[in-house]
Amino acid sequence: MENRIRLVLILLVFVWMGVIFGFSSRPASLSAQDSYRVGKLFAELFVPNFKNWSADSQDKYIRSIDRPIRKTAHASEYAILAMLAGGVFLVQSSLLKAGDHTGDDEQLSVEDNNSINGRFVPKVNKRRSVKSMVRPLMKGVAVSALFACTDEFHQRFVQGRAGSLVDVCIDTGGAVVGVIILGSAICLCGKLVKILRKNRQKFVDHSAPQDNC
Image (cartoon, rainbow, N blue to C red; front, side, top):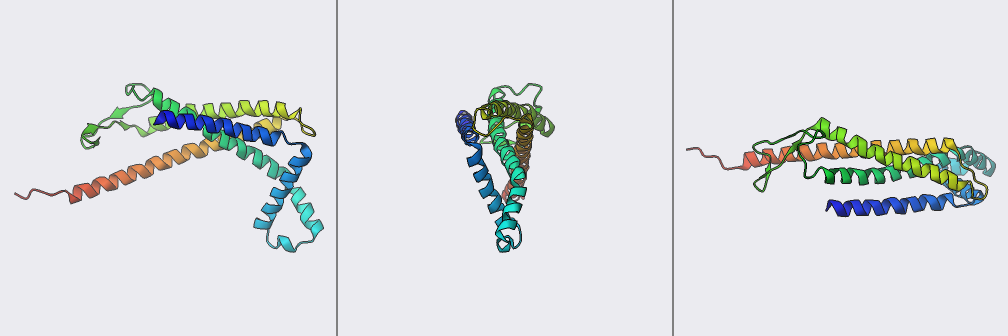
């Protein structure tokens, strides 16, 4: 199952890289039109009474937020890429450790009631499990940063566009935010699963028949 998930994530990484490459291949004039439409949609949704403004005022406002819209879009692209790439390395890391429960990355213990279908299940130390996510997620950031460098180089050959070291930093910053979101989501899901298991165990204990003899 894990191998299938990893293959799907790898495929999604390359698909998303292709999407980013496609956007970067658009000439500056077409890219500006895209940004203008996004800025107009943003203003219509979030700026009160924007539709009642004069055409000139609307145009000035949309152009004033053009740069933030562009940079946010770039950062968001690389946040998604880092989440996908980080997911690949997280799954790969779990596969490598699947047959080794004695390493330094995890501290395992077995509780008497911690079993499924009669088989004991190791309990992962929380601090170790969180720490074990850092390296795979940082690899996801590294992949995104490297692709950002190649993408900016590619843009030097696109009409009206140019590569920028500042954009590489923005893209990498977006990648960092992406893996933070992914890591936080995984931790939150882990806590929810733990709470559900505790509640289920309490229900089983209360509903189990008791011998009053």
